[in-house]
Amino acid sequence: MSCSHTKDCQLYPQFAADPSLKLWQQHYCESNFEACARYQIALSGKQIPLTLLPNGKLLQRYRKRDEMNAAALFNAIQKDRIHVVKSLLNGKLTKTVLQMADGTTPLMAAAERGNRDIVQLLLEAGCSPAHKNQAGEQAIDIARRKGHVDCVEAISPFMKQHITAALERESASKSEAGMMAEVLSFLRRLGPAR
Image (cartoon, rainbow, N blue to C red; front, side):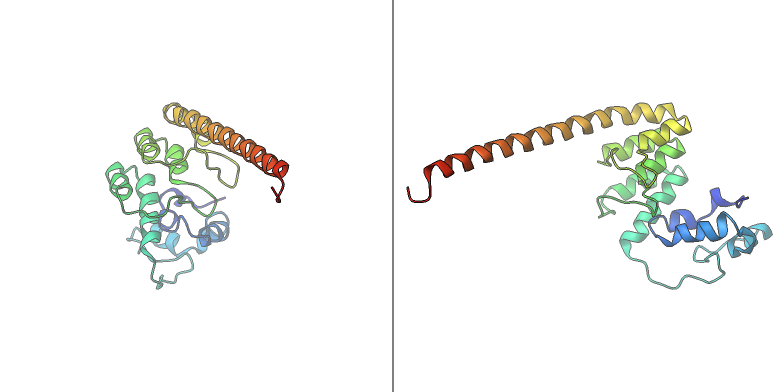
């Protein structure tokens, strides 16, 4: 049995890109959730401090701006806050590829939520639909599995563009390699003394 507060836990979006999240999930959320300090406070109905860890300790470390912005992006996606996603995409994120510890990208998170508007926004901002998580799924696979047909429809044209661009790059690379082989062959025929 797993924790009933998992969907609303602020730990997930806050530590989305942090590998320790997977450990907390395994130890607390999926097995020993009654021992989680966040769960215990949630049962009492009190406000849970954002910096409270499942073991009851308060987070004291300084987080880098990129980490905070990545956490904010995943949090905004989880809460369907499109205006916050727009704001973060307009210059606050410096990393080109953001991923959770399990390989989930913002596009995958939006596809899982079924928010077509955020999916479209992320795609238009340049998020690649080709990335795979640790389970080998792409955003389109997640949207299909969850039954979010509108998200699948939004991602499909971008997948086609990505595949076409990849094929063109591969073809250009082969063509370039072929030309290089011809030049090397010509130079060998000339010989170094000529």
